[in-house]
Image 1: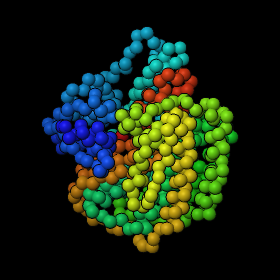
Image 2 (image 1 turned 180 degrees about the vertical axis):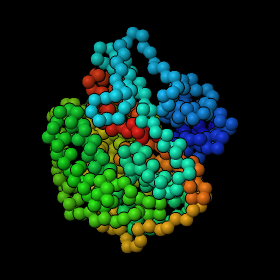
Image 3 (image 1 turned 45 degrees about the vertical axis):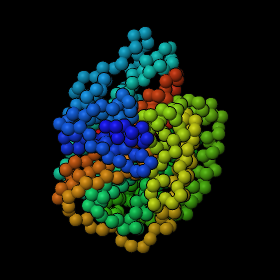
Length: 436
């Protein structure tokens, strides 16, 4: 146990999931990913009080029948058939919002404890999108399992890529170089139009219609290029275990033109007085909080955490992450803008430099275990698979939103209640990705 605590003090948890009659804790440290088997007989020692980044992982394990010895405040995370008690503040006014919201957003319940309009505490209850996706994975072959993995969250390319790489790692499959480049090109296009969608949403929330319209227009054009590459505007049914299914022909000149347009447009939009007035100093998440709670992706990098999985990928030589120190809504918007431009540059590079060769190799049925991580637009996507006879025995996934939802609870503390939608949009969290 001391080795586990030392690892958590030096690094951050990547995943924590059932493994046999115990559980497997994966921790990222400077020297790489380390695995720690913990517990036996479905009894696990709780570490959440000392390492709060593990709290939601432990709640998820408890829901699945594991006992967390020493955890003082276990509550259901996804299951609504179990009793749930919100934290009470006797002298504050409670404002419940959701789970059904106006518009087309997914369901989630937000319980605000306010003094006047000042938010002193937010408690988030999710699980309304729980589909039991992990529970229906066993028995599936590679194609059926990938269809499910693509629908885990709202970043299908990243989830499909991580799941396929986990499967390939389990069976020792070497993917052709051309397919590896095409996969990364699709991943970067997904990141680019995803970030532009986040910026368009932020501009809409502050009533900056011009910014939302201009960014949304380029986003739609980029989805058209994704369609030309993959056959789908969101990149679905493109990645397969062993490579990719097809190779389309995106317009490289158009991608270069969109990049130049955004390079001129985005800095000007983010310096507009309306943007600065509404986004600067609002919804701050400090670096110490981001590290303690294990936040990932732009959420962490906007708070000064210099970590991006592309730093470890050989296809991204000398990669430099986009980092900001402010931790506020504006910092997150700046990260989205710069990463969108960076992603377009990378997508073009992958498409221009793709080597000749096949698009895929055939994968034989076999037994094994594998895991993989991919830096999606929202942050780290993780998948683990255990295979027997070429079919899933166990699959475990972690969407970046699972790690980042508590950033919203921190960001709104001390802010006015009307600032909640803006803070929420600045993280662009996936309800379904959390509710696997």
